[in-house]
Length: 168
Image (cartoon, rainbow, N blue to C red; front, side):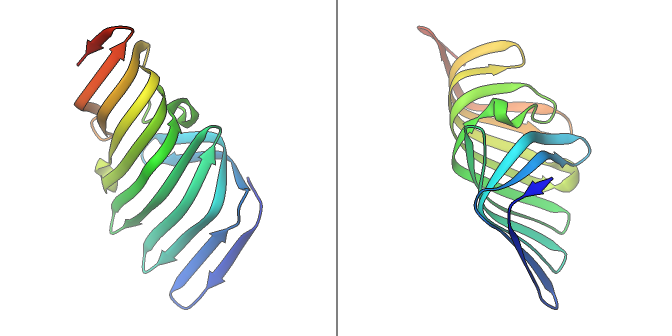
């Protein structure tokens, strides 16, 4: 369900949707083979969605609860590329990501890319109060790379701290 204003521009080979500020999308789900992300309410701030020559493109700021993503990306030729750089995140706001329970609040650079049937998510994070499934990890800095095809996770230069204890 969408509430707000959307301007649509249609030309011979392109359709552009310009979503006005404070437009909301309720019960959002992003699916490939399984539900990748879902959220009860997403707010848009002057976002653009375009379809041209079998290519989907978007750019803008998305927010939900206390998460703000500066997102830009495209889907073309069965490949996915999205980036959300210098974003403020609360991972709980995403719900399960690729079926995994991730928690943490802080800054993130997120890159989603790869062929549609082999999408990888790389999150460079600086988080507090983080956890993975039921494991409390405290403060985390570094990168997590998720491969959705084989449900694997790679930790890259990840450093954690719980109380006075450093780990990884």
